[in-house]
Image (cartoon, rainbow, N blue to C red; front, side, top):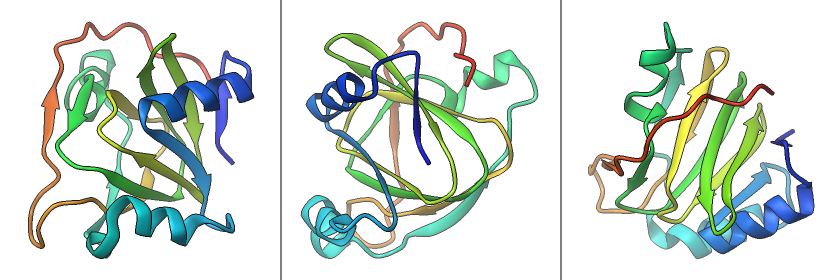
Length: 148
């Protein structure tokens, strides 16, 4: 189950909502409704990945570990493993530990991600069929990662 790191849970969820982020569970009663609302007809599974932990701190600050914004909305499901995702909100960074069964809904919010163990994901995102999920690096300085 997702766990907010270093902040009050209710405050963090309100900040995330304001930034266009929802953290849910696959068994939440409104999970399918949220998928339909965020992605509509584009909500089909686009693929599956296993994200491996970075080899060192330099690797942890590049790729998905760099602050970025994706061109389209995402509805990503964690199958197993653990990882930290951080989001920029109106009150600074909100960090969340994600585990199997969590769903991360991101509507173009600035974020970065670091797997702590091999972490399997089901990918769903907007855009035309066959399109890739394209991220734009924001250039934000990558500070240290929080401890879960």
